[in-house]
Image (cartoon, rainbow, N blue to C red):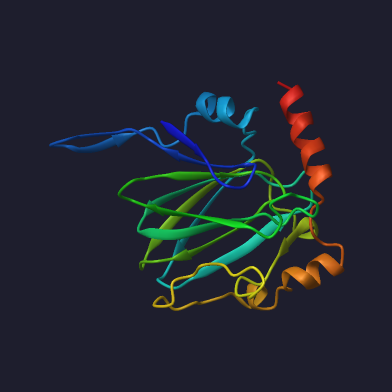
Length: 201
């Protein structure tokens, strides 16, 4: 498995080795020890989510209060999605910046998203199936979202793909409004939390 750090601290891309023969393909899409070696601590698996999306479905931009936040390991089982990670940690040197990875059933990459980062994706094909390994369970009181079409974020959604949002995502605040309301994660608090996970090994 090859790891590549994304432009935002706390986000990585993982590409598995694929073994193909006349029977099909075999790969190890998640290896706990290798992910922990790159991230600096194990991903404590508490919940696994799975979504199936029609083309144009836009999920996100989502994040959770830190601590404990919610780290994710995101993998596209079928189809293709444009996966976006945004640094929404107030005080971060890369605040407001984004990075993008195409996840699909060809290269079979995965993305690790640390606590405090914003995450979302756009389905590029009908029936795109995405699995998320999560460090914490869903807790509505600490889950938040930002509007994925906020011009300030400038997320690079392809112009030729429709955008279907849930009512909740369509009503989400802009980055500026969320910051003014004190909703966004604090970079220092996130770093302290990451350090606590590193030392707990």
